[in-house]
Image 1 (cartoon, helix red, strand yellow):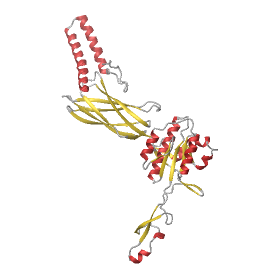
Image 2 (cartoon, one colour; image 1 turned 120 degrees about the horizontal axis):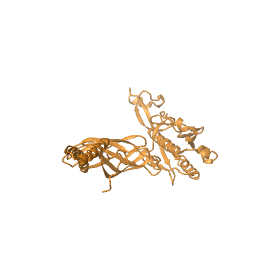
Image 3 (cartoon, one colour; image 1 turned 45 degrees about the vertical axis):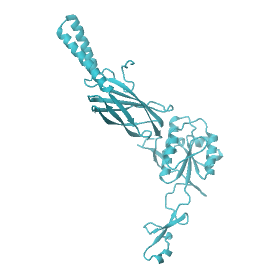
Image 4 (tube, helix red, strand yellow; image 1 turned 180 degrees about the horizontal axis):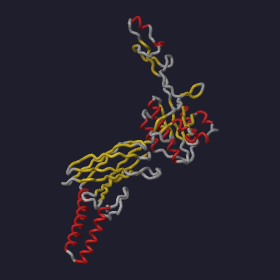
Length: 376
């Protein structure tokens, strides 16, 4: 067994607590006095101190040795938002364990800057020969696959002199979606002869859609949709024509990955994710292009958010953007390019006039999007 480090690598809690350090100093002083004077009372005090220190270390080690556990995580989470999980802990010893700390350090993707805070929780008591659930709450800052590899257990029960550690290898992973927020201004998703038109959620008027059937009159129905021939067949019953939409607006969100700022790129990804969810909630068909051969389409936003969770920035993307805008236009979708400095770099490009450009460098992120909690 490798030597136990003096400090925990994650929590920075000392192996020897302050009370244990005082007890060790007092025991050492008592031993020196006992050797010099030969007084049996000092030998008794020395033996008592050694017994307390030794029993603390032994009991703490015994309580951790019989613990096994399983980590339960959700499949997905959102960056910077808390999620709940739990440890299924089994204590196979004949005695209960008390005041056990659980420290879990997630490993973010390699591109993630900065440090990741550990997940820390504790159980006041673990019953003997029984299994319990120990809940915890975590918040991951980096999108992508975050991996959990080791759980560190620690306790200083019963006397608080020594803190004993035990590491249990436990492999798990969770896919973290980009940070999302509230869309303040919806994206334009329809093109008319006069130009781009914003998202219109009003009820469709007769003549614009296909006939789907009849239903009884309800307050708010258009009087022009009343089916008068049925009035003669069903006296006293007023029926109204029911229509369904013949054309669903479609949008293709194209991610401009060219940027030199990691913080700006995360804003681009978060703005794209928020608009994907907003379009889906309003019944707008949306696809996503993040580079590569073609756009990703899905009926729900989960597959699109999974693509955004693992996308990386790049140094150049001009030719790819032109091909993506052309492919989206050929498919009948309105191309929406979201990037950092996109308007400045491609203001003279021909394809830019056929697409909607959303530029976080131009301050549009402040007018279109707000993160949860109000922070930019």
